[in-house]
Every structure is written in C-alpha cells, then in structure tokens.
Image (tube, rainbow, N blue to C red; front, side, top):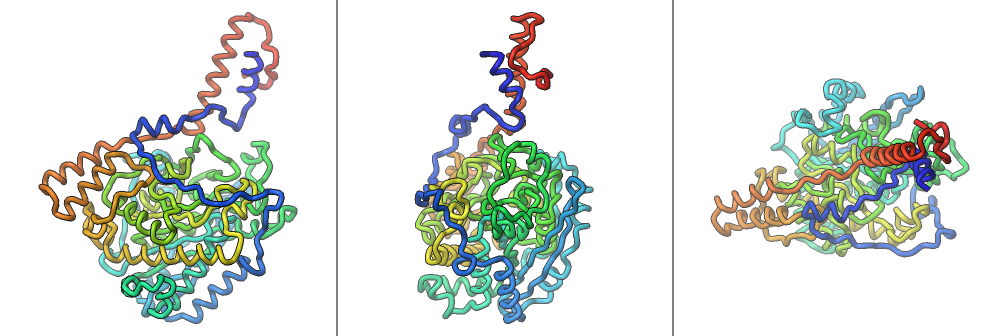
Length: 545
C-alpha cells in the first residue's frame, strides 16, 4: 500500500493533492463573513447554447466597425486610435496583436488630451521599464519596488480608464463597452434621464462630471482570444500557439467558447509584474498560465503603454463570470486597510444595492471569488501606476451553469437579459464617474486619508476581505468626518486599527507541490529502511529519483 502511494505521489507532475483549509486560515486572520450571493439557473449541458452572432451578440469585426463609425460621427468629442504590439517570442514563435483606444471628452477634445494620446509610446517603454526594474522585487512586492512616477497634473480634469474584453469568452463585457461609448456620445439630459431611472438630480451630477472628465476606453483588449471564441471547436485557424508547458499537463484544450486567454493560451490578467510567477494552490494551467516572463504578451504591453501615457486617476476592468465589484489586492483575501479602500467598499455597496439589487459580492476578490490571483492588471495599476481606484467589475455569471458550458456561464443568453445587464452596469459606470468627480474616494479630487461627509453617512458594508480592524477604521473615519468625539483620539484609534490589520499570505502551488514531494521522499525513505536493498515494487524506474 505504501509502495503504491509513493509511486502515485512521485508520478503526479502537475497536480497538488493536498487540500487547503481556507476557512481555518480566514478565521485565524480574523476575516469576517461576507455576502457572496449565488446567482443563476441550472442548465442542461447537453443543450448548452452557443452565441447568436446574428442577433443577440456581435462578432468582434462588426462591433469594431460600429465603434469606428460612432467616433467618426462624433469627432469633436471622440478620438480612436489603433495600437499595435509584438510580444516576446515563445518557443521561437513571434506573436502580435492590436487594440483600439477610444477617448471621449464632452464639449471637445482639449489639446492636453490629444497630446497625451498622441504621446503613447511604443513597446520600447515597456522593455525599458523591465530592464530597470528587477523581476524578483516585483514578484515578491518587496520594499525595493519603485512605482512609476506620475507626470501629468492631478488638479486638472478627472481621467478614468475602462478596459473591456480582457478575456475572450466574456462577450457581455464588450457589449457593455460599445453601449457605454454610445451613451457617452449621445449624453444629454434627454438621453440620460430614462437610463438613470428618471433621477434628474443624478442626471445633473453625471453631466457635470462628464464635463470635467476625460474617459479612455479599450473596447476589446484580447482580440485574438475573442476570435477563437467566435470559431467552432474543429476550427483552429485562430489558435496561434500552445506552450509546451500546457501540453505537458496531459489535459485537453478547452472548448473554443471557453477561451479565456489570448491565442497562445497566456492569460493577460496574470502577465503583470506584481506577484508574477507565483501560482495559486488551485492553479489551472489552461486558464491562468502567466507566460514565460512578466509583460511578455502584446495585450499587457499595450495596456502598459496606454496607462503610462494617460496616467488615469481611476481604472475599471470589466469582466464576467460572477456578480462582483472588487479592489486589490488579488493575491490575499485580506483587503488593504486605508481610507481610499474603505470609502470605495461603502460606495460599492451603495451602487450594488441600487443598480444590481444586491446581487454582487463586493470588496476583496481574493476572498469573494474563492481563489487568489497573482500577476493581475489591477494589482499593477495600484502598485505600479499608483492608481487610487483600480476596480474590477464582474458583470454577470450563472453560477449554476455546467463548467464546460462557458457561453451560458459567463453571458446572459437572451437579448432582454443582456440589455438589462448592459444598461444597469452602464448606470453603475456613470454614477461611479460622478462619485469620483465629487471627491468621494480619498486622494482623488479630495484630501488623502479622510472620508467625505457623504461617504461617512453610508452604512458599513458586509464586504469580503474585511476584519474587525477594517470596521473600526471605517467607524473612526466616519466619526472624524461627522465631527463626533475627540478628533485626536479618533485619529489615533483609526491609525491603530489600520496598523494592526492582519496579513495573510495563502500557500502557493509551489509550496504545496514541494510539500507533496517531501512526503513522497519521506515515505520512500521509510520503506527503503524497512525493506533494506530490495526494490520498491510499483515505483517506475524513471521516478526512482
């Protein structure tokens, strides 16, 4: 029996058998229970639907053409650029892609906006940064990392960036991107009043915010991955290359409608330098392969170049797969405990209740989505580009769908439901822009480290990733904003709560795999000692080492 167990453990090359007791770790860190609604309906996998490309959903090529036409018809306030990048060659194969960047400035594009967009540099700005910043420091997020200096003024117009379609299978994201741009192009009291449910006060606030905001939108980041989704499984014309590491897993390539990564099966949302190369204990190679090096992919390089030139105050990365609104960090279940984060989770609760009927989980993705992630876009926006508000929104998810039926798992099936989600999340986006403009996120058009009265009056959320210290800090910041209690005492109370917040680093894939191998070696050693020089039956010769 022991011999067979040793053989089994020694032969498992790409799987971790040890289980992680997440709840025990969460309890030890003092994490509070949070709302994680299960939303969706059971589907029969044998009847799994496919996208209606001629009706409900749009092919990427058709969608892109309509966006170009929209910008052309509104050229005073909108600009569109096509940007190209070549990624790092992998297995001696080159790989490239392109994206569109749409810029919107209500009332007319200013010279400063045009200059910034025209100043987007080529791939050399990425390569120079990689050369000057040690990979090891960023993979560990050590004290040696150097955030990218911000050069553009912070007291001018608000700058907000939206990224859609980072994962190919998330069609609803790019549908929202097109609708959102159309709403911006047509924005007026008459057009916004029905969208914002007749709330004339909110319409006025949104229009004022749009008058003082520059919006940068990428309608579809992962165009090559999306093209795979648009083809049948037997058609591999859009599959560029499969890395050897994935082939070595022995697992089959996912169905085309499940294509998350780009067309060489590297996830753009795991290819960023912050914590790059670490793999979660429940690592899924075909879904989240991080690539051979950080920023190896043209998709992530293009986003780096755009953010480097634009220097947004806030970024929203729009996904699907569940209902959620999240903030960094992604690599740990415990949220950052500072005023900007705490204000945003209160605002997320407000927007979720108002627009989504409370269906979305909010707060820390590392807790809410049941797994942690390394090398993410949002993590680098926060630590690299010093963005105060880097949010990830999960628009839709059928959490009862069969995991192989990706179209129904990640996207609404019928047109009415799709329109409902696209409309409501566009409402969230517009009100989010208004909240940013009003200075409700500390450090964006408002002082660092303090709540506004409006945020102070909002209730504490049952958000994921919070501990009692987060709640204490929120209460203290609210007291200070509303003039309750002794200000000096309240400030000390908040500072102590923030400083005493627990740190939780989840075990990585490598740590558990090494532990597994150590157990195998210990068992083998024990059997050798018991059996002397006899062979250990059941262990193949190639595993003898």
